[in-house]
Amino acid sequence: MAALPIPIPQVMEQHECPECGIVYFVPKRTCDERRRVGGSITCPNGHVGTWKESETERLHKALESARADQNWWKARADARDKELVRLKKRVGNGICPYCKRSFTALARHIHDKHPGRTA
Image (cartoon, rainbow, N blue to C red; front, side, top):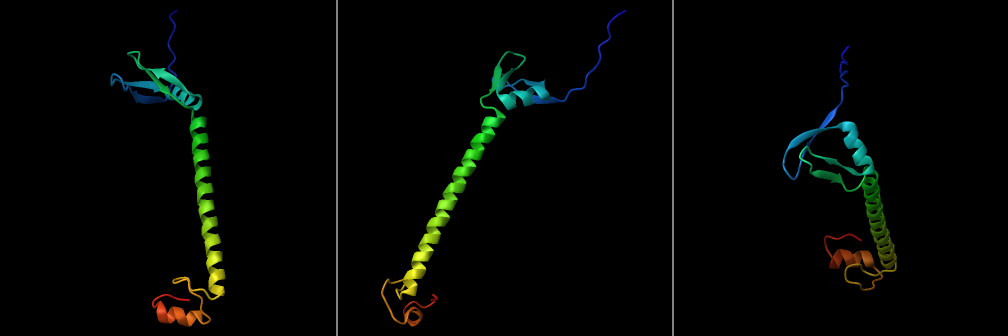
């Protein structure tokens, strides 16, 4: 009795070799594993295509970059808040925020000397 092949359905992923341009298919499960842990696949002509970093490493780098961005924005917001507090204190003490001079009637000075701006 002859052995009969049993077809096992697989989802295939299409790739194009950057060296020779041939289009070939690799099981999706194999590609996912190579992406996850890092590794390579070979085209039918023997050219090797690699994933230089695993999905975990790529996501870790993206997370670190996002944290650095968050820290930068937080530092910028803190500096702006500090400047706002400083400016409010100066205005509260009667110092004009536009010409840096001291006035007892600051609101009137701003209205007269800096039209279009509010105190």
